[in-house]
Length: 404
Image (cartoon, rainbow, N blue to C red; front, side, top):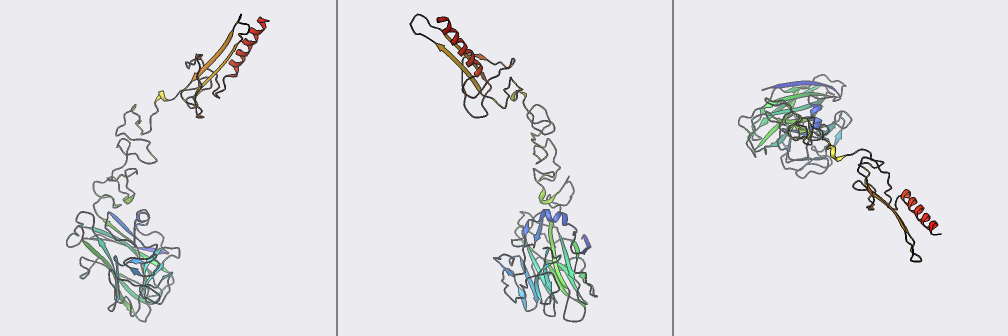
């Protein structure tokens, strides 16, 4: 059994796995707790308003949680408890309370919520909080790592003990590691957290479809008087060991970012480091990935999209590949009066580059064609070229002058 117990500073700061926990917080406390490579219980919406199998906003799901405050006061799985004055629905507080029972403790005054207990002579001495887990992974589970932070507001001169335990039947519980004992002498430090990491190896593997129970049991440890320190459980995280996606570097893995693993991320869903040529496009890093680093196939060796030289052209007399279309102009003049003379002058120019950015269609003519080598200044407005129109008008005037 591997165990790690660390003490946090006053007013949360960072717990042992806080950096990972934020990224992996995907299992809210108001839903069934299905075991997965990594699951963190999110208590941020809990406001101490009770328990219900169909929880309202701010409540916890009693299909997942059971609480025993004393021998005669028990909230069983699937039960309902709440309402004004209920020991199971004391509300939300930053601490220094007297009423016994379940609270939502805002342990840093900034919205970090813990499952809170205020023990008294009649509550949690002894008592137990139980969380029920379900294995729907499709395989047996042999090892589960449990992480949490126990917050203690040591505001009275009396000591309490809190033990982490596990059970396959919710009847016979086995302790995990050493219990945490709160200080006897009171202080004014507010909530101080102790981070705990334990690995549970059930006596028999948890079968697919089976349930398992994790509990925190409390009792007096010394001192006298009716008041006890306030307790809070927060940052609860479960990790299956030796599986990809648990956020831990297991044997044979190149990386493991937990639920941040993805085939578009730096660490893939198979816990391999993303590289160019693996056939997976890493978001924000690669433009393409065709499972090779060969050039000339549309995706370059550095996984950037290759541009086909034939799809773009340079400047052509004012016409570019991005601004294409057709332009034509014509001018004609004819005078057949008198029947003894006729003349005409026509000038037409056309340049075509594909399609017009303005979406205005095309004008076609029968004049010279731009081959892209000499350049052509053309107007794609659809009204004809002013230059060619001028030549046509000049020719018509010349013809009329010669007739006179």
